[in-house]
Image 1: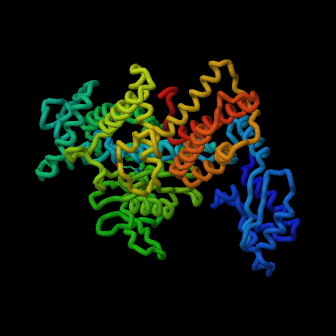
Image 2: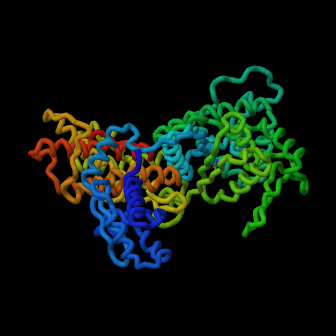
Image 3: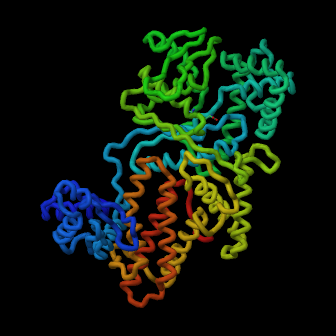
Amino acid sequence: MKKLMEKIGEELVKAFETAGYDSSYAKVTVSNRPDLCEFQCNGAMAAAKQYRKAPIQIASAVVDALEKGGVIGEAEAAAPGFINLKVNPEALSEYLNQMQMDQDLSVEKAREPKTIIVDYGGANAAKPLHVGHLRSAIIGESIKRMGRFMGHHVIGDVHLGDWGLQMGLIITELAERKPELPYFDESYSGEYPEEPPFTISELEEIYPAASARSKEDAEYKEKALTATFELQQGRSGYRALWKHIMTVSVADLKKNYSNLNVDFDLWKGESDVQDYIPRMAEYMKDAGYAYYDQGALIVDVKEESDTKEIPPCIILKSDGAALYTTTDLATIMDRMEHYHPDEMIYLADKRQELHFTQVFRCARKTKLVDGDTGLTFIGFGTMNGKDGKPFKTRDGGVMRLENLISDINEEMFRKIVENRSVKDKEAEGTAKIVGLSALKYGDLSNQASKDYVFDIDRFTSFEGNTGPYILYTIVRIKSILTRYAQEGGTLEKGVMLPPVGESEKSLMLSVAGFNTMIENACEEKAPHKVCAYVYELANQFNHFYHETKILGEEDQKRRASYLALLDLVREVLETSIDVLGFEAPERM
Ligand code: ARG
Protein backbone atom coordinates (compact mmCIF):
# COMPACT_ATOMS: atom_id res chain seq x y z
CA MET A 1 0.00 0.00 0.00
CA LYS A 2 1.16 3.50 -0.75
CA LYS A 3 2.50 5.51 2.13
CA LEU A 4 0.40 8.31 3.48
CA MET A 5 3.14 10.74 2.60
CA GLU A 6 3.25 9.45 -0.98
CA LYS A 7 -0.47 10.05 -1.32
CA ILE A 8 -0.03 13.59 -0.04
CA GLY A 9 2.86 14.03 -2.45
CA GLU A 10 0.73 12.97 -5.39
CA GLU A 11 -1.96 15.51 -4.59
CA LEU A 12 0.67 18.16 -4.27
CA VAL A 13 2.22 17.23 -7.61
CA LYS A 14 -1.15 17.77 -9.27
CA ALA A 15 -1.59 21.12 -7.59
CA PHE A 16 1.86 22.33 -8.65
CA GLU A 17 1.06 21.33 -12.23
CA THR A 18 -2.39 22.90 -12.21
CA ALA A 19 -0.91 26.12 -10.87
CA GLY A 20 1.67 26.02 -13.68
CA TYR A 21 4.77 25.07 -11.75
CA ASP A 22 7.19 22.24 -12.19
CA SER A 23 6.06 19.26 -10.13
CA SER A 24 9.61 18.43 -9.07
CA TYR A 25 9.15 21.11 -6.41
CA ALA A 26 6.28 19.21 -4.82
CA LYS A 27 8.32 17.48 -2.10
CA VAL A 28 6.60 16.64 1.16
CA THR A 29 8.22 16.13 4.53
CA VAL A 30 6.92 15.52 8.02
CA SER A 31 6.36 18.91 9.62
CA ASN A 32 9.07 20.35 11.82
CA ARG A 33 6.43 22.60 13.39
CA PRO A 34 3.90 20.08 14.68
CA ASP A 35 2.14 22.94 16.44
CA LEU A 36 1.21 24.36 13.03
CA CYS A 37 0.78 21.43 10.73
CA GLU A 38 1.39 17.73 10.18
CA PHE A 39 3.25 17.77 6.87
CA GLN A 40 4.88 20.52 4.92
CA CYS A 41 6.28 21.40 1.52
CA ASN A 42 9.08 23.92 1.07
CA GLY A 43 9.06 23.68 -2.73
CA ALA A 44 7.69 27.17 -3.33
CA MET A 45 10.85 28.64 -1.84
CA ALA A 46 13.01 26.66 -4.24
CA ALA A 47 10.72 27.40 -7.20
CA ALA A 48 10.88 31.14 -6.52
CA LYS A 49 14.31 31.44 -8.10
CA GLN A 50 13.32 29.70 -11.31
CA TYR A 51 10.04 31.60 -11.73
CA ARG A 52 11.31 34.93 -10.36
CA LYS A 53 8.28 35.30 -8.14
CA ALA A 54 7.81 35.75 -4.43
CA PRO A 55 7.64 32.30 -2.79
CA ILE A 56 4.42 33.15 -1.00
CA GLN A 57 2.76 33.85 -4.35
CA ILE A 58 3.68 30.42 -5.60
CA ALA A 59 2.67 28.76 -2.32
CA SER A 60 -0.74 30.47 -2.41
CA ALA A 61 -1.34 29.48 -6.01
CA VAL A 62 -0.53 25.85 -5.19
CA VAL A 63 -2.81 25.87 -2.16
CA ASP A 64 -5.65 27.27 -4.30
CA ALA A 65 -5.07 24.61 -6.90
CA LEU A 66 -5.34 21.70 -4.44
CA GLU A 67 -8.34 19.51 -5.06
CA LYS A 68 -10.77 19.19 -2.21
CA GLY A 69 -11.75 15.98 -0.55
CA GLY A 70 -8.50 14.10 -0.93
CA VAL A 71 -5.89 13.08 1.62
CA ILE A 72 -4.92 16.69 2.25
CA GLY A 73 -7.58 18.16 4.48
CA GLU A 74 -6.23 21.63 5.15
CA ALA A 75 -3.53 23.58 3.39
CA GLU A 76 -2.15 26.99 4.12
CA ALA A 77 0.51 29.19 2.58
CA ALA A 78 2.67 30.69 5.32
CA ALA A 79 5.34 33.37 5.06
CA PRO A 80 7.83 33.35 3.52
CA GLY A 81 6.54 30.51 1.34
CA PHE A 82 5.87 27.36 3.30
CA ILE A 83 2.94 25.16 2.44
CA ASN A 84 1.54 23.78 5.69
CA LEU A 85 -0.57 20.70 5.41
CA LYS A 86 -3.00 18.77 7.57
CA VAL A 87 -4.37 15.37 6.79
CA ASN A 88 -8.04 14.94 6.12
CA PRO A 89 -9.38 13.04 9.18
CA GLU A 90 -11.62 10.88 7.00
CA ALA A 91 -8.79 9.87 4.72
CA LEU A 92 -6.71 9.09 7.80
CA SER A 93 -9.20 6.70 9.35
CA GLU A 94 -9.76 5.12 5.95
CA TYR A 95 -6.00 4.61 5.65
CA LEU A 96 -5.82 2.92 9.03
CA ASN A 97 -8.83 0.73 8.26
CA GLN A 98 -7.02 -0.55 5.19
CA MET A 99 -3.81 -0.97 7.13
CA GLN A 100 -5.61 -3.10 9.68
CA MET A 101 -6.96 -5.41 6.98
CA ASP A 102 -3.54 -5.77 5.39
CA GLN A 103 -1.53 -8.57 6.95
CA ASP A 104 1.70 -6.71 6.16
CA LEU A 105 0.44 -3.60 7.94
CA SER A 106 0.82 -1.62 4.70
CA VAL A 107 4.52 -2.36 4.42
CA GLU A 108 5.72 -3.13 0.91
CA LYS A 109 7.87 -6.22 1.12
CA ALA A 110 10.91 -6.68 -1.10
CA ARG A 111 9.89 -7.42 -4.67
CA GLU A 112 13.14 -9.23 -5.35
CA PRO A 113 14.12 -10.89 -2.09
CA LYS A 114 17.85 -11.03 -1.49
CA THR A 115 19.89 -13.70 0.25
CA ILE A 116 21.66 -12.06 3.15
CA ILE A 117 24.07 -13.61 5.64
CA VAL A 118 24.32 -11.90 8.99
CA ASP A 119 27.53 -12.79 10.81
CA TYR A 120 26.93 -11.97 14.46
CA GLY A 121 27.33 -13.35 17.96
CA GLY A 122 30.95 -14.23 17.25
CA ALA A 123 31.48 -15.93 20.60
CA ASN A 124 34.79 -17.62 21.21
CA ALA A 125 34.20 -21.25 22.09
CA ALA A 126 35.46 -22.38 25.48
CA LYS A 127 35.69 -18.85 26.77
CA PRO A 128 32.78 -17.65 28.85
CA LEU A 129 30.33 -15.48 26.94
CA HIS A 130 30.85 -11.99 28.27
CA VAL A 131 29.26 -8.61 27.77
CA GLY A 132 31.62 -7.83 24.90
CA HIS A 133 29.65 -10.31 22.83
CA LEU A 134 26.33 -9.08 24.06
CA ARG A 135 26.02 -6.15 21.69
CA SER A 136 26.89 -8.27 18.69
CA ALA A 137 24.15 -10.75 19.58
CA ILE A 138 21.51 -8.14 20.35
CA ILE A 139 22.10 -5.86 17.39
CA GLY A 140 22.72 -8.70 14.95
CA GLU A 141 19.54 -10.49 15.92
CA SER A 142 17.57 -7.33 15.24
CA ILE A 143 19.28 -6.73 11.88
CA LYS A 144 18.45 -10.32 10.92
CA ARG A 145 14.82 -9.89 11.90
CA MET A 146 14.60 -6.59 10.02
CA GLY A 147 15.78 -8.25 6.83
CA ARG A 148 13.30 -11.07 7.27
CA PHE A 149 10.50 -8.66 8.00
CA MET A 150 11.17 -6.97 4.67
CA GLY A 151 10.88 -10.34 2.97
CA HIS A 152 14.53 -11.22 2.39
CA HIS A 153 16.06 -14.62 2.85
CA VAL A 154 18.32 -14.01 5.83
CA ILE A 155 20.73 -16.55 7.28
CA GLY A 156 22.24 -15.92 10.69
CA ASP A 157 25.69 -17.39 11.33
CA VAL A 158 27.28 -17.32 14.78
CA HIS A 159 30.80 -17.61 13.33
CA LEU A 160 32.44 -19.02 16.43
CA GLY A 161 36.03 -18.31 17.28
CA ASP A 162 36.85 -21.98 17.71
CA TRP A 163 40.31 -22.49 16.30
CA GLY A 164 42.61 -20.20 18.16
CA LEU A 165 45.07 -20.19 21.00
CA GLN A 166 42.36 -20.74 23.62
CA MET A 167 42.19 -24.35 22.44
CA GLY A 168 45.95 -24.87 22.80
CA LEU A 169 45.81 -23.33 26.27
CA ILE A 170 43.07 -25.66 27.41
CA ILE A 171 44.86 -28.68 25.98
CA THR A 172 48.11 -27.69 27.71
CA GLU A 173 46.43 -27.12 31.05
CA LEU A 174 44.55 -30.41 30.84
CA ALA A 175 47.76 -32.24 29.97
CA GLU A 176 49.27 -30.93 33.21
CA ARG A 177 46.27 -31.78 35.32
CA LYS A 178 45.36 -35.15 33.87
CA PRO A 179 48.41 -36.46 31.99
CA GLU A 180 47.01 -39.99 32.21
CA LEU A 181 44.23 -39.23 29.68
CA PRO A 182 44.68 -41.02 26.35
CA TYR A 183 44.41 -37.77 24.35
CA PHE A 184 48.00 -36.91 25.19
CA ASP A 185 49.50 -40.27 24.36
CA GLU A 186 50.77 -40.09 20.80
CA SER A 187 51.09 -43.84 20.49
CA TYR A 188 47.48 -44.39 21.53
CA SER A 189 45.52 -45.97 18.72
CA GLY A 190 42.23 -47.00 20.34
CA GLU A 191 38.90 -45.21 20.38
CA TYR A 192 38.76 -42.07 22.50
CA PRO A 193 36.15 -41.94 25.27
CA GLU A 194 32.75 -40.60 24.31
CA GLU A 195 32.31 -38.68 27.53
CA PRO A 196 34.12 -35.33 27.72
CA PRO A 197 36.79 -35.30 30.44
CA PHE A 198 35.36 -32.08 31.92
CA THR A 199 32.08 -30.29 32.61
CA ILE A 200 31.23 -26.79 31.50
CA SER A 201 32.09 -25.34 34.90
CA GLU A 202 35.46 -27.07 34.83
CA LEU A 203 36.05 -25.80 31.34
CA GLU A 204 35.19 -22.30 32.43
CA GLU A 205 37.70 -22.53 35.22
CA ILE A 206 40.43 -24.12 33.08
CA TYR A 207 40.60 -21.45 30.40
CA PRO A 208 41.15 -18.38 32.62
CA ALA A 209 43.66 -20.32 34.70
CA ALA A 210 45.61 -21.34 31.63
CA SER A 211 45.40 -17.90 30.11
CA ALA A 212 46.71 -16.28 33.29
CA ARG A 213 49.56 -18.73 33.57
CA SER A 214 50.61 -18.26 29.95
CA LYS A 215 51.11 -14.58 30.62
CA GLU A 216 53.68 -15.28 33.30
CA ASP A 217 55.25 -18.48 32.11
CA ALA A 218 56.94 -18.23 28.71
CA GLU A 219 57.61 -21.94 28.47
CA TYR A 220 53.98 -22.75 29.17
CA LYS A 221 52.89 -20.30 26.52
CA GLU A 222 55.24 -21.95 24.06
CA LYS A 223 53.62 -25.30 24.83
CA ALA A 224 50.18 -23.84 24.24
CA LEU A 225 51.26 -22.42 20.89
CA THR A 226 52.67 -25.78 19.89
CA ALA A 227 49.49 -27.54 20.98
CA THR A 228 47.43 -25.06 18.91
CA PHE A 229 49.64 -25.73 15.91
CA GLU A 230 49.44 -29.49 16.37
CA LEU A 231 45.70 -29.36 16.75
CA GLN A 232 45.46 -27.42 13.49
CA GLN A 233 47.79 -29.93 11.81
CA GLY A 234 45.42 -32.70 12.83
CA ARG A 235 47.01 -34.48 15.80
CA SER A 236 44.31 -37.02 16.57
CA GLY A 237 44.23 -36.89 20.37
CA TYR A 238 43.99 -33.11 20.24
CA ARG A 239 41.27 -33.22 17.63
CA ALA A 240 39.28 -35.58 19.85
CA LEU A 241 39.73 -33.23 22.81
CA TRP A 242 38.79 -30.27 20.66
CA LYS A 243 35.53 -32.02 19.75
CA HIS A 244 34.75 -32.46 23.44
CA ILE A 245 35.53 -28.82 24.12
CA MET A 246 33.21 -27.83 21.28
CA THR A 247 30.35 -30.09 22.37
CA VAL A 248 30.40 -28.85 25.94
CA SER A 249 30.94 -25.25 25.01
CA VAL A 250 28.37 -25.06 22.21
CA ALA A 251 25.68 -26.62 24.41
CA ASP A 252 26.35 -23.86 26.94
CA LEU A 253 26.39 -21.13 24.30
CA LYS A 254 23.08 -22.33 22.91
CA LYS A 255 21.53 -22.06 26.34
CA ASN A 256 22.89 -18.56 26.82
CA TYR A 257 21.80 -17.32 23.43
CA SER A 258 18.40 -18.81 23.85
CA ASN A 259 18.00 -16.89 27.12
CA LEU A 260 18.62 -13.81 25.02
CA ASN A 261 16.03 -14.85 22.44
CA VAL A 262 18.82 -15.04 19.88
CA ASP A 263 19.07 -17.95 17.51
CA PHE A 264 21.32 -18.88 14.64
CA ASP A 265 20.67 -20.87 11.50
CA LEU A 266 24.31 -21.77 11.19
CA TRP A 267 26.67 -22.77 13.94
CA LYS A 268 29.75 -22.52 11.84
CA GLY A 269 33.10 -21.30 12.98
CA GLU A 270 36.64 -20.54 12.04
CA SER A 271 37.52 -24.24 12.14
CA ASP A 272 35.05 -25.07 9.37
CA VAL A 273 37.00 -23.32 6.67
CA GLN A 274 40.47 -24.71 7.34
CA ASP A 275 40.29 -26.85 4.22
CA TYR A 276 39.71 -23.80 2.09
CA ILE A 277 42.87 -22.07 3.16
CA PRO A 278 45.51 -23.90 1.06
CA ARG A 279 43.25 -23.71 -1.99
CA MET A 280 42.59 -20.03 -1.43
CA ALA A 281 46.26 -19.19 -0.97
CA GLU A 282 47.19 -21.08 -4.15
CA TYR A 283 44.52 -19.31 -6.12
CA MET A 284 45.53 -15.87 -4.89
CA LYS A 285 49.15 -16.58 -5.74
CA ASP A 286 48.44 -18.06 -9.16
CA ALA A 287 46.16 -15.26 -10.17
CA GLY A 288 48.88 -12.79 -9.27
CA TYR A 289 47.02 -11.08 -6.42
CA ALA A 290 49.21 -12.37 -3.61
CA TYR A 291 52.98 -12.30 -3.29
CA TYR A 292 55.62 -13.12 -0.70
CA ASP A 293 57.07 -10.35 1.38
CA GLN A 294 59.62 -11.29 4.05
CA GLY A 295 58.23 -14.79 3.96
CA ALA A 296 54.60 -13.84 4.47
CA LEU A 297 52.01 -14.16 1.73
CA ILE A 298 50.28 -10.82 1.32
CA VAL A 299 47.80 -8.93 -0.86
CA ASP A 300 48.07 -5.17 -1.17
CA VAL A 301 44.80 -3.45 -0.43
CA LYS A 302 45.67 0.22 -0.20
CA GLU A 303 43.90 2.62 -2.49
CA GLU A 304 44.88 6.00 -3.82
CA SER A 305 42.12 7.85 -2.09
CA ASP A 306 43.14 6.53 1.35
CA THR A 307 43.79 9.23 3.91
CA LYS A 308 45.35 6.83 6.39
CA GLU A 309 47.55 3.89 5.73
CA ILE A 310 45.82 0.58 5.07
CA PRO A 311 48.42 -2.15 5.52
CA PRO A 312 48.45 -5.17 3.19
CA CYS A 313 46.25 -8.12 4.00
CA ILE A 314 48.31 -11.03 5.33
CA ILE A 315 47.08 -14.33 3.93
CA LEU A 316 49.69 -16.59 5.53
CA LYS A 317 52.36 -15.74 8.08
CA SER A 318 55.97 -16.66 7.30
CA ASP A 319 55.59 -19.90 9.30
CA GLY A 320 52.59 -20.77 7.15
CA ALA A 321 50.05 -20.08 9.93
CA ALA A 322 46.63 -18.66 9.15
CA LEU A 323 45.38 -15.46 10.78
CA TYR A 324 42.01 -13.93 11.64
CA THR A 325 42.04 -12.30 8.18
CA THR A 326 42.71 -15.67 6.56
CA THR A 327 39.74 -17.42 8.14
CA ASP A 328 37.45 -14.51 7.35
CA LEU A 329 38.47 -14.63 3.69
CA ALA A 330 38.11 -18.40 3.56
CA THR A 331 34.68 -18.05 5.16
CA ILE A 332 33.67 -15.67 2.39
CA MET A 333 34.74 -18.30 -0.11
CA ASP A 334 32.71 -20.96 1.68
CA ARG A 335 29.65 -18.72 1.85
CA MET A 336 29.83 -17.78 -1.82
CA GLU A 337 30.07 -21.45 -2.79
CA HIS A 338 27.27 -22.66 -0.57
CA TYR A 339 24.80 -19.82 -0.22
CA HIS A 340 25.54 -17.32 -3.02
CA PRO A 341 24.59 -14.39 -0.79
CA ASP A 342 23.79 -10.99 -2.28
CA GLU A 343 25.08 -9.41 0.89
CA MET A 344 27.09 -10.29 3.98
CA ILE A 345 26.67 -8.18 7.07
CA TYR A 346 29.17 -8.38 9.93
CA LEU A 347 28.65 -7.26 13.48
CA ALA A 348 31.72 -6.65 15.61
CA ASP A 349 33.30 -4.10 17.89
CA LYS A 350 34.10 -0.95 15.92
CA ARG A 351 37.75 -1.38 16.82
CA GLN A 352 37.78 -4.18 14.24
CA GLU A 353 37.07 -1.72 11.45
CA LEU A 354 40.54 -1.91 9.90
CA HIS A 355 40.37 -5.69 9.85
CA PHE A 356 37.11 -5.62 7.91
CA THR A 357 38.34 -2.93 5.54
CA GLN A 358 41.28 -5.17 4.67
CA VAL A 359 39.16 -8.30 4.36
CA PHE A 360 36.50 -6.63 2.19
CA ARG A 361 39.02 -4.99 -0.11
CA CYS A 362 40.96 -8.19 -0.45
CA ALA A 363 37.81 -10.21 -1.19
CA ARG A 364 36.86 -7.74 -3.92
CA LYS A 365 40.29 -7.46 -5.41
CA THR A 366 40.80 -11.22 -5.55
CA LYS A 367 37.23 -11.69 -6.82
CA LEU A 368 36.18 -14.02 -4.03
CA VAL A 369 32.89 -12.14 -4.29
CA ASP A 370 30.96 -10.88 -7.30
CA GLY A 371 31.15 -7.24 -8.25
CA ASP A 372 27.74 -6.56 -6.78
CA THR A 373 27.97 -8.64 -3.61
CA GLY A 374 27.40 -6.35 -0.67
CA LEU A 375 29.90 -6.46 2.19
CA THR A 376 28.84 -4.42 5.17
CA PHE A 377 30.51 -3.94 8.51
CA ILE A 378 28.46 -2.64 11.41
CA GLY A 379 30.90 -1.65 14.11
CA PHE A 380 29.44 -1.04 17.53
CA GLY A 381 30.68 0.99 20.44
CA THR A 382 31.54 -0.13 23.95
CA MET A 383 29.12 -0.83 26.73
CA ASN A 384 30.40 1.25 29.61
CA GLY A 385 29.70 1.26 33.32
CA LYS A 386 28.45 4.34 35.12
CA ASP A 387 32.08 5.42 35.56
CA GLY A 388 32.33 5.78 31.78
CA LYS A 389 34.83 2.91 31.51
CA PRO A 390 34.15 -0.46 29.84
CA PHE A 391 31.65 -2.37 31.92
CA LYS A 392 33.15 -4.56 34.64
CA THR A 393 31.92 -6.49 37.64
CA ARG A 394 32.03 -4.83 41.04
CA ASP A 395 35.43 -6.36 41.72
CA GLY A 396 36.79 -5.24 38.38
CA GLY A 397 36.54 -8.53 36.50
CA VAL A 398 34.94 -9.25 33.17
CA MET A 399 31.20 -9.59 33.68
CA ARG A 400 29.74 -12.90 32.61
CA LEU A 401 26.64 -12.56 30.54
CA GLU A 402 24.72 -15.00 32.70
CA ASN A 403 25.37 -12.90 35.78
CA LEU A 404 24.44 -9.74 34.02
CA ILE A 405 21.12 -11.23 32.96
CA SER A 406 20.35 -12.52 36.42
CA ASP A 407 21.19 -9.12 37.94
CA ILE A 408 18.68 -7.50 35.62
CA ASN A 409 16.04 -10.13 36.27
CA GLU A 410 16.40 -9.74 40.01
CA GLU A 411 16.00 -5.99 39.79
CA MET A 412 13.03 -6.42 37.49
CA PHE A 413 11.45 -8.94 39.85
CA ARG A 414 11.86 -6.52 42.72
CA LYS A 415 10.17 -3.73 40.77
CA ILE A 416 7.34 -5.93 39.53
CA VAL A 417 6.56 -7.29 42.98
CA GLU A 418 6.65 -3.74 44.28
CA ASN A 419 4.01 -2.89 41.71
CA ARG A 420 2.00 -5.85 42.97
CA SER A 421 -0.20 -6.10 39.92
CA VAL A 422 0.97 -9.65 39.27
CA LYS A 423 0.56 -12.74 41.36
CA ASP A 424 3.87 -13.92 42.81
CA LYS A 425 3.94 -17.22 40.98
CA GLU A 426 3.82 -15.37 37.72
CA ALA A 427 6.20 -12.63 38.70
CA GLU A 428 9.38 -14.56 38.08
CA GLY A 429 8.46 -15.48 34.50
CA THR A 430 7.31 -11.95 33.88
CA ALA A 431 10.54 -10.54 35.30
CA LYS A 432 12.47 -12.57 32.74
CA ILE A 433 10.44 -11.32 29.81
CA VAL A 434 10.54 -7.72 30.99
CA GLY A 435 14.19 -7.99 32.00
CA LEU A 436 15.11 -9.00 28.48
CA SER A 437 13.32 -5.96 27.11
CA ALA A 438 15.26 -3.79 29.57
CA LEU A 439 18.57 -5.22 28.41
CA LYS A 440 17.85 -5.22 24.69
CA TYR A 441 16.06 -1.90 24.49
CA GLY A 442 18.75 -0.27 26.63
CA ASP A 443 21.23 -1.33 23.99
CA LEU A 444 19.24 -0.94 20.78
CA SER A 445 17.87 2.51 21.55
CA ASN A 446 21.40 3.87 21.07
CA GLN A 447 22.90 4.27 17.66
CA ALA A 448 25.04 1.13 17.31
CA SER A 449 28.33 2.91 16.67
CA LYS A 450 28.09 4.92 19.89
CA ASP A 451 29.32 3.84 23.31
CA TYR A 452 26.61 3.71 25.93
CA VAL A 453 26.30 3.49 29.66
CA PHE A 454 24.78 0.35 31.06
CA ASP A 455 22.55 1.50 33.87
CA ILE A 456 20.40 -1.22 35.46
CA ASP A 457 18.35 1.28 37.38
CA ARG A 458 17.41 3.30 34.35
CA PHE A 459 16.98 0.33 32.00
CA THR A 460 14.56 -1.43 34.34
CA SER A 461 12.46 1.65 35.04
CA PHE A 462 8.82 1.63 33.99
CA GLU A 463 9.09 5.28 33.09
CA GLY A 464 11.03 7.01 30.37
CA ASN A 465 12.59 5.67 27.22
CA THR A 466 12.94 2.05 28.36
CA GLY A 467 11.90 -1.45 27.35
CA PRO A 468 9.70 -1.94 30.43
CA TYR A 469 7.84 1.29 29.62
CA ILE A 470 7.07 0.03 26.12
CA LEU A 471 5.91 -3.34 27.48
CA TYR A 472 3.86 -1.63 30.14
CA THR A 473 2.06 0.30 27.44
CA ILE A 474 1.37 -2.84 25.43
CA VAL A 475 0.09 -4.64 28.52
CA ARG A 476 -2.15 -1.69 29.31
CA ILE A 477 -3.70 -1.94 25.85
CA LYS A 478 -4.07 -5.69 26.17
CA SER A 479 -5.86 -5.35 29.46
CA ILE A 480 -8.37 -2.90 27.99
CA LEU A 481 -8.97 -5.28 25.11
CA THR A 482 -9.43 -8.16 27.54
CA ARG A 483 -11.87 -6.23 29.65
CA TYR A 484 -13.82 -5.33 26.55
CA ALA A 485 -14.02 -8.99 25.58
CA GLN A 486 -15.08 -9.94 29.10
CA GLU A 487 -17.90 -7.44 28.84
CA GLY A 488 -19.06 -9.26 25.73
CA GLY A 489 -17.56 -6.94 23.12
CA THR A 490 -15.97 -8.21 19.95
CA LEU A 491 -13.20 -6.49 18.05
CA GLU A 492 -14.08 -5.44 14.54
CA LYS A 493 -11.91 -4.33 11.68
CA GLY A 494 -12.64 -1.52 9.27
CA VAL A 495 -14.67 0.42 11.83
CA MET A 496 -12.32 3.26 12.65
CA LEU A 497 -14.01 6.64 12.49
CA PRO A 498 -12.27 9.94 11.76
CA PRO A 499 -10.47 11.17 14.89
CA VAL A 500 -12.24 13.64 17.12
CA GLY A 501 -9.52 15.00 19.37
CA GLU A 502 -5.96 16.13 18.75
CA SER A 503 -4.43 13.31 20.78
CA GLU A 504 -6.37 10.76 18.79
CA LYS A 505 -5.30 12.28 15.51
CA SER A 506 -1.61 12.39 16.48
CA LEU A 507 -1.80 8.78 17.55
CA MET A 508 -3.39 7.81 14.26
CA LEU A 509 -0.78 9.71 12.28
CA SER A 510 2.01 7.89 14.08
CA VAL A 511 0.40 4.54 13.38
CA ALA A 512 0.07 5.48 9.72
CA GLY A 513 3.79 6.27 9.63
CA PHE A 514 4.76 2.72 10.55
CA ASN A 515 5.53 1.66 6.97
CA THR A 516 7.71 4.70 6.27
CA MET A 517 9.62 4.18 9.51
CA ILE A 518 10.22 0.45 9.22
CA GLU A 519 11.30 0.56 5.58
CA ASN A 520 13.75 3.29 6.39
CA ALA A 521 15.08 1.62 9.53
CA CYS A 522 15.59 -1.65 7.65
CA GLU A 523 17.27 0.09 4.74
CA GLU A 524 19.67 1.81 7.12
CA LYS A 525 20.04 -1.26 9.35
CA ALA A 526 19.20 1.01 12.25
CA PRO A 527 17.27 -0.63 15.12
CA HIS A 528 17.53 2.61 17.11
CA LYS A 529 15.04 4.13 14.68
CA VAL A 530 12.52 1.44 15.54
CA CYS A 531 13.09 2.20 19.23
CA ALA A 532 12.56 5.93 18.69
CA TYR A 533 9.33 5.14 16.87
CA VAL A 534 7.89 2.78 19.50
CA TYR A 535 8.74 5.28 22.22
CA GLU A 536 6.91 8.05 20.42
CA LEU A 537 3.96 5.79 19.67
CA ALA A 538 3.76 4.62 23.29
CA ASN A 539 3.82 8.23 24.48
CA GLN A 540 1.08 9.18 22.09
CA PHE A 541 -1.03 6.25 23.11
CA ASN A 542 -0.66 7.08 26.80
CA HIS A 543 -1.56 10.68 26.15
CA PHE A 544 -4.69 9.60 24.27
CA TYR A 545 -5.54 7.08 26.97
CA HIS A 546 -5.39 9.67 29.74
CA GLU A 547 -7.66 12.01 27.81
CA THR A 548 -10.22 9.53 26.60
CA LYS A 549 -12.92 7.40 28.15
CA ILE A 550 -12.55 4.29 26.08
CA LEU A 551 -14.67 1.50 27.56
CA GLY A 552 -16.93 4.09 29.14
CA GLU A 553 -17.74 5.68 25.77
CA GLU A 554 -21.49 5.49 25.25
CA ASP A 555 -21.65 5.87 21.51
CA GLN A 556 -21.32 2.26 20.34
CA LYS A 557 -19.71 3.15 17.03
CA ARG A 558 -17.22 5.46 18.61
CA ARG A 559 -16.31 2.84 21.18
CA ALA A 560 -15.83 0.20 18.51
CA SER A 561 -13.63 2.66 16.65
CA TYR A 562 -11.47 3.33 19.73
CA LEU A 563 -11.02 -0.37 20.30
CA ALA A 564 -10.08 -1.02 16.70
CA LEU A 565 -7.49 1.75 16.99
CA LEU A 566 -6.16 0.26 20.23
CA ASP A 567 -5.83 -3.13 18.66
CA LEU A 568 -3.95 -1.67 15.72
CA VAL A 569 -1.60 0.26 18.02
CA ARG A 570 -0.96 -2.98 19.89
CA GLU A 571 -0.24 -4.82 16.67
CA VAL A 572 2.19 -2.16 15.46
CA LEU A 573 3.98 -2.08 18.83
CA GLU A 574 4.20 -5.86 19.05
CA THR A 575 5.44 -6.14 15.47
CA SER A 576 8.08 -3.52 16.18
CA ILE A 577 9.39 -5.15 19.35
CA ASP A 578 9.46 -8.50 17.61
CA VAL A 579 11.80 -6.94 15.06
CA LEU A 580 13.87 -5.69 17.99
CA GLY A 581 13.99 -9.22 19.39
CA PHE A 582 11.79 -9.23 22.48
CA GLU A 583 8.15 -9.68 23.37
CA ALA A 584 5.49 -8.51 25.79
CA PRO A 585 3.92 -10.57 28.58
CA GLU A 586 0.15 -10.84 28.98
CA ARG A 587 0.19 -9.09 32.34
CA MET A 588 2.74 -7.17 34.29
N1 ARG B 1 35.23 -13.97 17.49
C1 ARG B 1 35.47 -12.60 17.18
C2 ARG B 1 35.79 -11.82 18.45
O1 ARG B 1 35.51 -12.27 19.53
C3 ARG B 1 34.31 -11.93 16.48
C4 ARG B 1 33.96 -12.52 15.14
C5 ARG B 1 33.31 -11.52 14.22
N2 ARG B 1 33.02 -12.06 12.94
C6 ARG B 1 33.91 -12.27 11.95
N3 ARG B 1 33.54 -12.85 10.84
N4 ARG B 1 35.16 -11.88 12.08
O2 ARG B 1 36.33 -10.73 18.35
